[in-house]
Length: 322
Image (cartoon, rainbow, N blue to C red; front, side, top):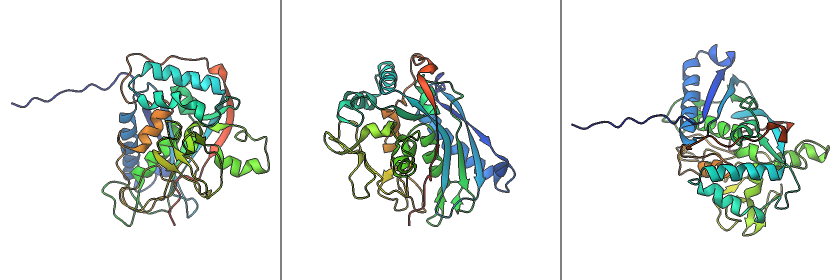
């Protein structure tokens, strides 16, 4: 007889609870839309073991023609020293996260190495690092109702992958992807208002943005080289987007159909890659403190008073590839 092995759900694990807007619950495809959301959240909840329980609002409304999905959320300011200390505490509690350990060891080679500038991070990342409560995340993810989405997989070559798009957006709620850089604001509103929230701050992924070994990159130039690296620029894990029409901390190049990266700044129709521990998106999240293996104890908590609010973050997530 072949016996089955019962696997218990970790006591400490990420839980993202969806809150469905009436634009979804009142839609004729409500069950399919909610099913896609549940599928995306199930994948991400199953990858990260940090003991964080957050809720995210989901809407299904019309948006600009070039937009697939978008996320609106508040960002929070934290000093460089406090942020790095929180990451170090997480790394000490989770030695299996070697990506984070490597990233911390090479911070002196990256942007903001002097620690003079503050970081702008999402509420979910702040809560995960013990820098704020689970009520900090206040994100809303909108699905553009005018786009042709496949609500389930497999995805045909004529439709966009909603599950992959949702995974892309939830990554940003957790602090990765477009939420991990302030370059979009620097390229935009900071030109007219240099005192704006994002203008003198870095994002969580900006600390790992390089153009060459020992050469950090922090420019909005369309011809610049920029890639994600956790070892001081020696190894390029994946390219960062340098097209101002997309998010600078999303990935480049643009998607080419089936198997395209979830965190690409621009994607075509067709099914996205599976989101697994082998995905560059997973390494991206590990580098900012999300851990893969259940922890033996809760993360150390830091006083929420060290973190300051706020800057409203809204990006044009996942534009279509043209």
